[in-house]
Length: 212
Image 1 (cartoon, rainbow, N blue to C red):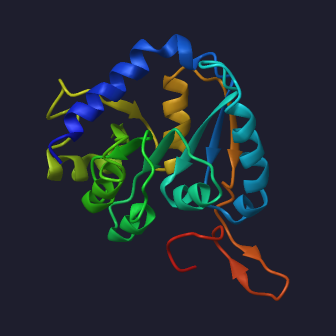
Image 2 (image 1 turned 30 degrees about the horizontal axis):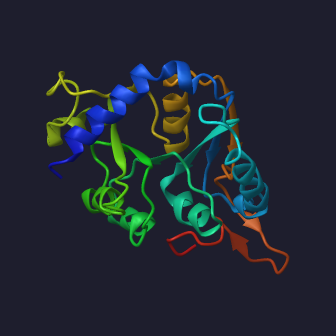
C-alpha cells in the first residue's frame, strides 16, 4: 500500500502536535465486540448524538473501537475516531470488508493481515482513512518482526506508536494515553462466553463478522 507511509506520518504528526487538543477530551471510550455491546449501543448512540452539538475541540469523549466492533458500531450509527487491528489471520478481512466510512484512523501491527488493512484504507476515497503502525515491544513478537523487516529495529526513521501488549483493547488504551487522555471506559470488552436464556452460548455481539 504505497500511501500508508504518508498516512502514517500524517497521523503521527496530528497526535504529536495536537496533544493539547486531545487532552481537552476527558474520556476515552474503548469499545470491544463482547456480548454486552448489544446492551450498550443505544446509550453510545445517544452520547454521540449529543457530541455533535458540541463546539469543535470540546467533545466529551473519543471513541476507540477494536476491529471486530467496527461494523456493529457503524450499523448503529456510531463512528469511532480510532480502530485497532492486531491479528495476522485472514479472517480479520471480514471486519473491514464493505466498510464505506472515512475520517477514521487505524492502529495496525506490522503483522496485521494486509487485505484487511487494504479494505480499511480504501473504504472511502473522498474522505480517506489514516493509519498508524504499532511497535509491539513484547519479546514474543521478535520473530514476526524479523520476518517482515517492518519494525523500529529495521526502519527507525519511521514514526511508530510503541507499546507492550498483545490485545487490541490495550492497544487503544496505549494510544489514548499517548494522546494525553487519562480517563478510560471499557464497553463491550467482556471477551468471554455469555449464556442465553435458551442455554446456548454467545461469544460476541450481534453483527460480529465471524461465526460464533
